[in-house]
Image (cartoon, rainbow, N blue to C red; front, top):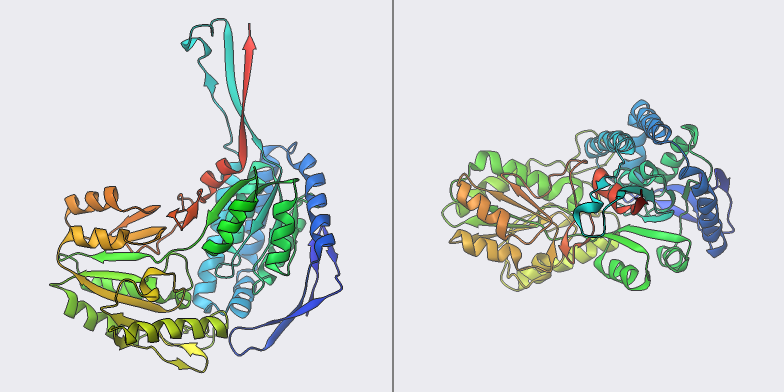
Length: 472
């Protein structure tokens, strides 16, 4: 299979193509076009031209296009799931779930397209405002550069493209190098749904090269990026006056208080820790358990982890498959070995079999170890005990990240204390930090980023407010 670029409503060939290999088994999936600077600039020019149509398009038409896309994905659910499974090595049960969420995300975008409105301003509330009326309108920004990661190749694209189209913008989309096929599939759907040519362009290739061209182009009015803190910081520092939204990952923690029902809590934590090999920004990485429950918790989570099936992502029963690359497996294994050398205990996993890292449980990890204080992005979780709730809050907050955190407790006072004192973008009470529904605000603090996704909130980020004042 040969995959060209998608620019201005047409497939565009390039001088160079790279082999796309499956993370599971390293078999060849496709030959994917590598964009050069001229193609990136062509995509931006196409988007700039299409924006003139998009900003004049009635809201109901934008909504109808988004609804049609949702319907097309619904019709091709299994095909879309297989694309995700092949290029991202995401187990089919997780891939199907992502497709379902993608459909819902575009439906939410269609709803929000119809709900964009301003407000009237009481001009005479201030001296000198007499005899005037004022109101605000919201206008699209223009061309938006969307840079997406490999771990949710359809739904995170939807969280950027959906609100951009809903608001009347045009988009240049740069998908992750490992997962471009999902984005090209979505571009086809939008084309068939009637989106003007150039309103959505997809360009694959070197992230550094393409990102550099997009960031420096004055026609780009906003950059929305999901990825690593180092790249996010570079984007922020080099974007000038462009608007920037960054979602940069985390080392998400969950607190299990002394009154928790472990029969309910443990399966949820195993899901949050090992779904899609832990390659989720809000994957459970740090677990802090009250000392009175610690030993029982460890035994139960070991038993639950053993139930996970490891294998091919295309098999329905698979829970854990290959990580996105052999280098990521090597890095995660090094972090595990470092923690063990510093006194941590291995309760489960820790080995690599057939290039798949086993789901790994570590106990009593020093909190300055990378597997605790950095983002492991792997099927690795550590479990430490705490004596009192204040100590648990402090340990969760002792991090450079702050995306989401979970707290299990039946004490309403402790629940509100956690809600008030945890320095994160989202606090999940009696739930894992991995919980997300697509209409909620989503984003973090500290190294976890800036700005918010979630369709309504992303639409706000992608529009400008204009005041109109009439002197009567």
